[in-house]
Each structure stands twice: as C-alpha cells, then as structure tokens.
Image (cartoon, rainbow, N blue to C red; front, side, top):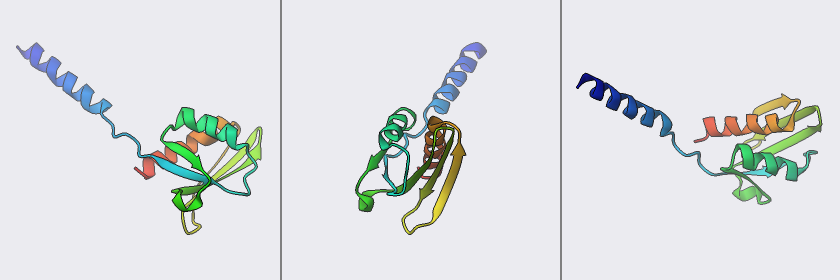
Length: 110
C-alpha cells in the first residue's frame, strides 16, 4: 500500500512540474534602425518563441526590438513603450540573441 501511495504522489508531483502556464502572446515591432534581416529574426522567433511575433503596427506592439550587428556580433535591445530600454544582449550567434530576448520576455512579462 505504501508503494502505491508513493507512486501516486510522484505522479502528481511530476504532473504539477510539467503544468507550467502557457506564455502569453506578445508582439514586437522592429526598430527602423535595425540592421538584422527581419526574415532571419522571424525564423528564429518561430522556433524559439512561438508566442512572440513581429508586427509593423507600433501602436499594437508590446515592445520594440532593436536588432543590430552582423554575423559574429549581434546586439539586441528590448524597448518598452515610452522609450525605456529594459533588456540588452550581445551574442555571437543570431539564434542566441533571439533566444535571450525570448527568455527575457517570457520570464518577466507573463
């Protein structure tokens, strides 16, 4: 009986650990000064962060993304409405810059 109870408790704990809230949908508008190809950014966004999309409508966006740099040196900044820079990352790979932005957005803006 103790084994069955222990097994059920473990199953319940495993289920609770897997039941994380679904990340909320968010929209990013790309800064006009960005130099990174938006198609490449969107390609990585759809893989790493399917709840985040790019939009052309700044009024309906949640944040602005500045994506600068070139292969081997990418610099991304997330800018809140009102102009405050709230996150920045610098990476060698584009995929890592997008991943960093996604993790920031999903951790702090659920």
